[in-house]
Picture 1 (cartoon, rainbow, N blue to C red):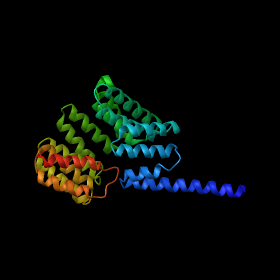
Picture 2: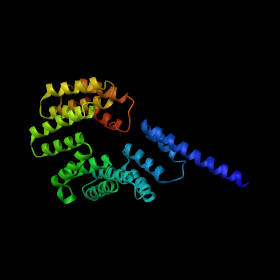
Picture 3: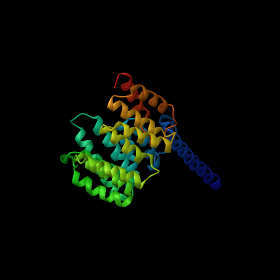
Length: 282
């Protein structure tokens, strides 16, 4: 009888592992609702609640995301990943809430980003988000350029190309446009095979009204990764923001929406929103 019970428990455990793997696979394919359906049948633990929260985050359901992620963090209070995703989710709630509660959510986002970095200083994504928070938030909410500069220096030690990009953003905020461009080009030189670094420069050149140079940078990115969906989205977004090439922007977004996306790509909802914007004339 004992052997039978052990076998049954092992089978249940394997089923849970297989189901969690299936849910993760669906998440990576951006099939977030299907992933949640698989997760609903599993016993709650840190990994399950974390993936539930990530799915809800990607669906734009930020309240449900924070609820699940707080449960995940309660299971694993030393998890930098859980703290980081909580920061992201509260950050989105701050962006989408009314003025009365937004500051509270923003402060929670900062606190969780700081906790994520403290728990694991090698968590580059958390450190990047903390930098963005310090760069964007006013001093009353714990932001500030000096704080951002300190984080940028640490980022540069971990990843020189990412550090150059962070310094470019700081220089742009300080109206040091030549320095910003110099740092973006440095980031591209430090990571010559990174499409993201080329896109950073392409978007910045467009922002500065240097469209011909921007187009050349986009073309270079396209040559490097012809099928990368993020290039389609970035180029369409630039066209729509600049109110030019709107027909081409619509075509790029339609192609994007038919691409195989990953969670690292902008969400389909963002592309659909841009497509509506382009169809209405920008």
